[in-house]
Image (tube, rainbow, N blue to C red; front, side, top):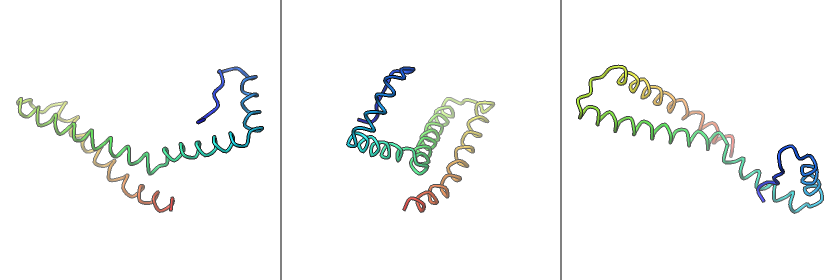
Length: 109
């Protein structure tokens, strides 16, 4: 089990779930272990890595669209300014993530 699910608002089912966890040590241990495993998926290091990958993919997509726009002779305007701003924002965000990820890695050791 990853969790014990009960219907929203059903206080009797909630009480029964709590009773099961208290009365069944193996169930409590399994839920605890799986909970810790799941929580690791949300450590700052993991989240920062996923965010960095998302930013990099957005930048690659932006570059592909920019090349396509240039090949169609689209004049830069508001759209071009938005793309430039997005690229600068993504680049700055990536730079700010690097030290944080390193610090997070040192703490987890």
